[in-house]
Image (cartoon, rainbow, N blue to C red; front, side, top):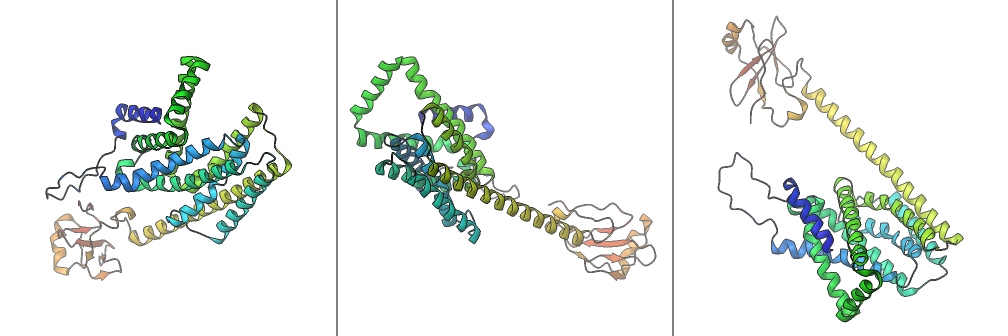
Length: 376
């Protein structure tokens, strides 16, 4: 956590654009605005502390479970994190529930149970610690997504790490002092140095911290651009790599039930991916249909004075009185304003020219006159 905090601080120091800042008030308001603190005590203790604490519990409980279970079994238990991620995504309204999604969750649960039943070296405490880590992992990812999307102080991954890494350090250090006593922590560091030497010992502490920093920054970036469920789905590749590495390095054995449960979980995740892609395509098509509909409405007249994206800023058009068209005679464009369609556009009698009047500035626009967009 110290390494992650140092790296996040260095990134924010090198790249000032990534530093969090308070949003500026609109320029058209001239009232004095006293500067507001970016991080208030209420925000710190109700948003940052819960996120950092749950992240610490996820990491601490998961690491502790490795004392009792194999890395392969731990990884397969952690695959159940998607169940908790979906649950908290529903509770915090980050994901819309559906029958298909619930069926997929139940199937994933079945796959996790199959993985547990197939473990020959089952340890109840290790399994409980791993599942508790999965619970807190789902909780903390939901809280992290809320931080990344809803507050300027934590609007990018490095700023988020800068704020929550010290909280994670304090939480983990406090828990370790109670569960292992300070003397055990100090003696553990001494044993590490005496066994591997100070250079290798520092490497074993710093290198994993750098890897964790890169991993968490990548996860936060993905979380900021997609959703907490998509992040968990992408994590299945990490689990497959971890299981493969455990089999190669530690020679962990996989039973038939292990493999079956893992396959069920992977198939369920693939089904979710398919549903997610279909949903994203439907949403994209709906946006295109709405945009095309707006273009048809806003550009029904020839030439189109305003773009569809500027429909909110377009002033209402009104009829042009017949006597007002004499003002335009010196421009070589005769207008009579007798016709008027549903969009507030007057049509000329002989030339087919169109006329609208800006209700705020009184400007009269004709087909032969350059048409300007109102400047807010």
